[in-house]
Length: 112
Image (cartoon, rainbow, N blue to C red; front, side, top):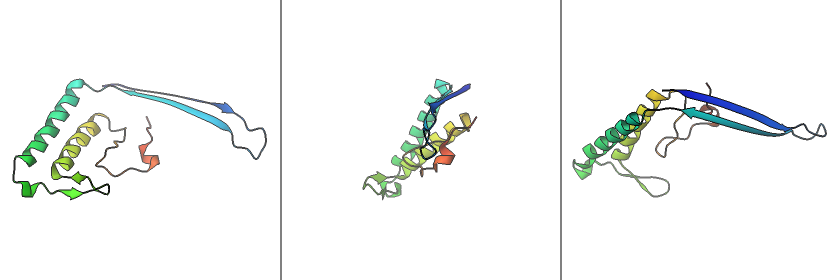
């Protein structure tokens, strides 16, 4: 597994003390993860989903989200499996997913 990081800042100084500088920040982050690791995480998430859905439907624990879409125990379990797998391989990269609470901007910044 490898990672790379590069950034560049360009811009113009303000023409007066009351103006903000015009800045552009470009950033590229590259991370290598073995395809097999991703496949294994997806299979493990699928197994977690099937374990829930092959059981009694009363144990699916269906909740309605704010947008009126369902969230089940299987959704939560699959998310947990995938997040844990990705976090083990790329602990320095915050994970954003539909089932996770949105982290503050500072926590989502990638530092290497």
